[in-house]
Image 1 (tube, rainbow, N blue to C red):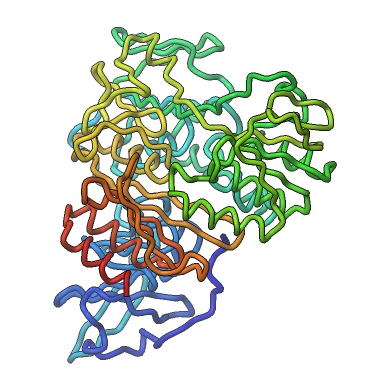
Image 2 (image 1 turned 45 degrees about the horizontal axis):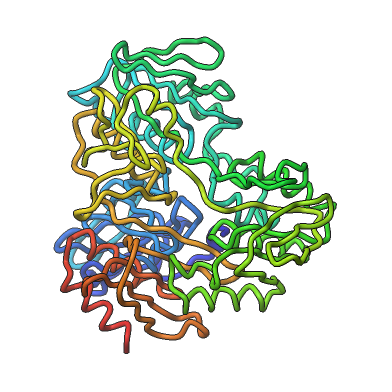
Amino acid sequence: MGGSSGQLSGPDLSQGIALSELKDGAPLLGHTGGEGVVVVRSGSEVFAVGASCSHYGGPLADGIVANGTIRCPWHHARFDLRTGNAVGAPALNPVPCFEVEQENGTVRVRRKREAARPVKPSVAPSSVVIVGAGAAGAACAEMLRREGYEGPVTLVGAEEPGPVDRPNLSKDYLAGNAPEEWIPLRNADFYRELNIELVVKDPVATLDTAAKKLRLTSGRELTYDALLLATGAEPVKLSIDGAGLPHVRMLRTLEDSRAIISRAAQSKRAVVIGSSFIGLEAAASLRQRGLEVTVVGPDAVPLGRVLGEEVGRFIRQVHESKGVAFRLGVTPVRIDAQQVVLSDGSALPAELVVVGIGVRPRTALAEAAGLKVDRGILVDEHLRASAPGIWAAGDVARYPADGRTVRIEHWVVAERQGQAAARAMLGKGAPFQEVPFFWSMHFDVGIGYVGHAEKWDMLAVHGSLEARDACVVYREAGRIRALATIGRDRLSLAAEAAMERGDERALEALVAGATT
């Protein structure tokens, strides 16, 4: 997704508007000094922040106001209305914050405010090491500095170039719609300016929790007072003949995406093994590059187990309308140089094979160190692991949520957990209770999903999937566990806010409104 158009809309806020024009809690779009601005009234106070989300440029005026924040309708980033700070991922950068003047019932937006200097925390570890430079690790490192921590921070990543915008690797970048310079989340200069040491291509080999010491593959040793394990997940590998051939690729890292793009330039036909989100997004991206694409999967309906069969059939139709073919209910048994042989004896020609059959949490380091592990690193409500001074976050963490213990493989959840772990290290942590959110793109159809429904006993589609205006409600024992939306971004935001508050009555009212 690109940024905003840059065209100015609404009133010139430097000239002023009547206070009566501002409805409490309703964003109003205007501009000042040639820059888009959103103003928000909250009781007797009025706030003004930049109009474009710092993540992908989403229009904040189309979002909602909740709990002192304004929230982006595209990917649910949150910004503090008083400071402009990005307080909820996926946005990491603040938006501008402006001075507001009220006089005789008129509101005027004045100059930008200077960013406040972070306040040094009263609790501070002597040093912090972060293992894993993905979403959670990168977000943790930045949050430590934003919260005023001045001690040593070392961010250890397994591969170059360090933190990248991983969701884009299967979406716009793979499709050829986003340049590579958009992919790194931060560059080396950014970390140098924050005095964060970034270590890449030298992963951690061992962890000694008693000595609070790590040894890297190179032999270098790192000591820590606080440690975040954000080792993420790794793709499940195919175990069939031909899985190691050079034209067979998985998709997890920037190097993987580069290799697929390079091979796609020499190919006419691709087979995607796996009808998961990553597989379908890769299929859409390769189709946009002009390849003939066939998706192979064992399920009868793609995404049926996650989104339900009706939604899965709709997503399949979207792909088929763009020329993607499906071979479902079968599995690959062998890959040759020019074809993929399937379990029903048929074969699909392919010069490129992309494998997306799921991921597993990287727990080997934690297990070897004696931490408690059960399908992920077990943590408490503050994301603390079973040894002193250690936290875990992201795809590898299994944490308590809503009476269950869950491990969630969502980019936004990972970033927010990294931010929460940083605050916890500094004695500022509250229990991690963020509502899970993810988004997925299928050509021009975007799906937003809030909540977490590992299972459900009732599913209802409100609106029209075909018209791309729908809300899908997942219930378990009568209770709403999750919502998926297409074309209803504000509803998705409002549902997330209701779930945060634990306000089931408000959530039910939103769903009731979605049926009309």
